Image (cartoon, rainbow, N blue to C red):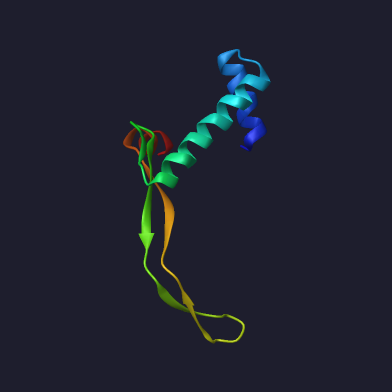
Length: 90
């Protein structure tokens, strides 16, 4: 399912207009993105939790040349699946 299909499903389920459903989705994604950028955790009980974690610096290899490459530490987004979603997908 892509973004447009998701918006169409929101319209069907809620009865909202396509424009309103698109704005709701954009606002939701922007809110999650802002929270993660600040280092906060976003949790939806039964669905899952969005959070950030620190990936440590490491040395990798260039696949073309085999030369070692240093990769700096960085913060990455993570998602942990909630129990209800995990059970629904089984």
